[in-house]
Amino acid sequence: MRPHKLSFKGVTNCVIRLMQSVKFNAEIPFSDVLSTSQSRDSMSTHHPHPPKLAKTMGTTIEEPERGNSISVQMSDSETVESPADRVHKYLAQALTARSIEREKSNNVNFFTLRFNNKDKEKGYQAAEDISFSFSLVCTLIMVVLISALQVIILPRTLLLLMLFILAFAWPSIMLIFILSIKLKCTNFDIRKSSNLRVFIATTTVMIPYVMVQMNVLCCSGAGGLSILEVLSVLDDDHHLTCSDPNYIILSGIVCFFLLALFVKVQPMLKVVFMVIIAAGHVLVMELTHKALFDRLDQTLNPPVPTDIYGILAFVMFLLGFSLQNREQEWTLRLDYLWKSQELYSQQYSKVAVFFASIPNFSDFYVELAANNQGVECLRVLNEIIADFDELLDLPYYEGVEKIKTIGSSYMAATGLKPTHLVKGREDSITFYLTMVVDFVMSMKEKLKNINENSYNNFELRVGINCGPVVAGVIGARKPQYDIWGNTVNVASRMESTGVSDRIQARPRYLSNL
View: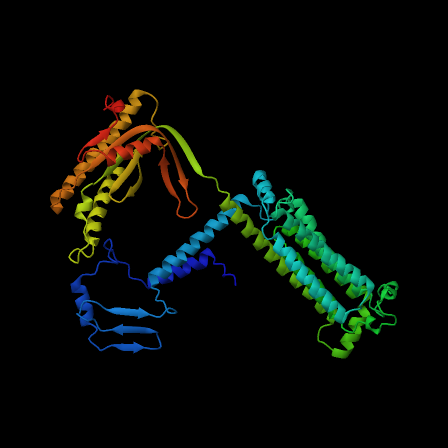
């Protein structure tokens, strides 16, 4: 079952209502895992009652053994979702919806559902249709079922037998050909040719349609093709009479299903073929088999004539399948866009890179009950990194770009921003290397203040290098901007093998400093 599509306006209204029910307070970092023994004791005093079993809610609340913990076990089927979690969930859904709509409008034509970029359209059409084999198999099953129903309801004629053999043999041959491709017996893959796929799909659908129509026209006394009655398998077969003309409506709708099985066929082309199928059945209903519908109406006395009901059914299914095909095509094309996104990358000839780590932080970090299993140590590290990040807001360090933090190591670079590129001249290299060193010295000053306030002796160990790098974004989920190259590797090795409380740099750039 497909999820209901959320509008941005509806999600916004829901978020506003949820925010009104939430009391937003300034939270302490890591407050969700920081719970002191005093707070736990206060929680235990508020629940002095003996253990109770809430059967209706599926929860078990046990009395804490030492007054310092409360054990709450939830059943697998029950989950507690806070208003804040619901706000985050709805905001994520709203942002995803807006992102999808932007991708649609920027890349795909709304009416034709084709890519605005011709190269992307060629690539999409040339992509392999992995569901093509499955569609042919489903077509075979549908052909067998249609033929079985025709044998029961409609005339059993030699024409029906020949058309059934043709309708069954055509997709079977295509499946054998696809199997030979998988067995590497042939190199030509019909699934990678868009025109050939469309031809096979339309032929596979139109042959059963012709089989249905021709056998309907074999009905005696319906104003059809009387010459076809002589093709009966058995002489004087009274089965040629068609007592229930509703099969005409059902057979046309089944042909719609056959056409919907083929995924990578243009929606506009599918609509054209569905209109042809519907028009053919409506002509049979109104021109050749009108008398059969009139006799059925005289017997059943329906409030709406059966042939009118059939026309309305064709219109409804035509609109429904058209909308479904459009949504399916949107999904396929967006999936192709996301999978074919090229890696964003840019090469720089000169970038100053530095790694700054706190080598003795590992000695400081311990997991004890006194520091809440190491959370207090992480709080100190968070304050250190936050102080380092504050330096980036200073105008002088506008050219410094933070890349990432790895544990207690801080990685940044200069020369990545378009307005602060390192030129090949020595004065430009000197300027940005000096900016890096000044930034490191400011980091050491920040760390010194933290040491004085926290009674610690943290030290910085820094490695600096300058040279060519490649910068880019990688990953489809949670993409991250990063830089690569031998320049980065050398700076990292100089930091990891250097002397604590010192700045390591290559002799080539010592003269610039």
